[in-house]
Structure formats: C-alpha cells, structure tokens
Image 1: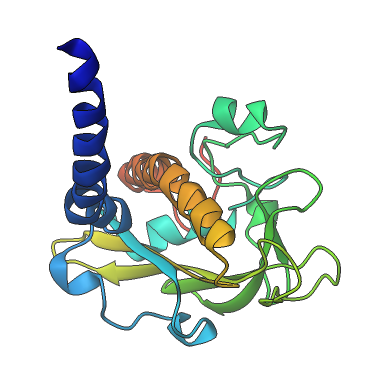
Image 2: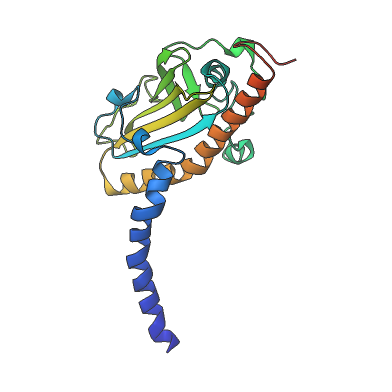
Length: 233
C-alpha cells in the first residue's frame, strides 16, 4: 500500500508545486511590498532592458521624506556603506560587506559611471547609469571583462542585460515610497533561465532585508533631525 502511494505522491507534487509557484509564490516574490499599480507602471531605467525574462518590483513605505532616504542610497555597495541586508550571509560567500549605521559624508559623492559592487573584487557589480538626486538611482550590470555595461552574448553562459533601479516617491504626511525594480534579459537557454530564476528567488529575502534596513536607518536619522550629508552625533 505504501509502495503504491509513493508514485502518486510524487505525481501530485509534480503537478501542484508548479501551480503553487505560478499562482502564489512567484507573484509574491516579484512584488513584495508593491501596490497593484506599482508592478507594471513605468519607472526610471525601464528602457535599458527591453522585454525582460525576469523582473520584479518591490517596495516599502518609509516614515521619512525623500531627502532623509537619499543619502543611504548614495552609500550603497561593497567597500562603501554596504547593502543594509544580511551581512553575515553575504560574507559567507566572501562578499566582505559591512553595512554602516550612519551617513558617511565622504560616501555622499556618486557619479554616472561609478561602480556599485555587491562583492569584493567588483564581481558581480553594477555601474551607475543615471542619478536624479532625491528621486532615482539607476544601475546597470557591469561586465567584468570589459568594465562596461553587460550585454547578452549567446556564446557566454549566464550572460544578461540587467538594470536595478531605486525610486523615491512622496507618499503624503511626510512619508515616502521606496521602489526597487530589477529587470533581466537572459540568453534564453533553459539552463540559464533556470539558474537565474534561482538567483531571483534568493534575491527576495536579501532585498527585503535591504528595504527594511534602509527604512529603519532613514526613520531613525529623520527622527534625529539629520540633514542630507550630515553624520550622526
């Protein structure tokens, strides 16, 4: 009886797990914290990756004005202010990240073309594509072999076009919405798409923690009355 039940259980799992993924987990993963109108409406940087295979829009409401949040975005990156996520988990992978809890004046300078790295050694890393102070920061994936923006290459496994945008929008009563949109176009190979889907799934807890980390820091500094570029006492 038990022997007969096992194949039926595997068959049931094979049918129900993809359905559950498509109906519940995948939408939640792609739209954590986002409002219904946030998911597909245009945001800065969307034009950089047309027809993405993988995309997400995640968001959080922060009880602080945009000028209290913007300094934390300017500091993003390994060797800078960190990623405000799970440092210990990132460092298990050799990222060498330490997230700061203060606004560091010397890290408040960021320009188009600068590198925002996720790991020591600048791989993986992003390039600053556009900056609209107090409103949006748009990053594009960096090709480690050229130092320029990465592009899909059909002969290079895991090659992608990728953008990562951080957008601040006033939300009334002194609050702000921070939206993070990722868009990724792969080579289209099955193995690549599967591997990048795993990366996307892993990004949810890390990016969620980042958004919470930025929120907590910005609300604290706003409560202390700190201006942009000022360091806490």
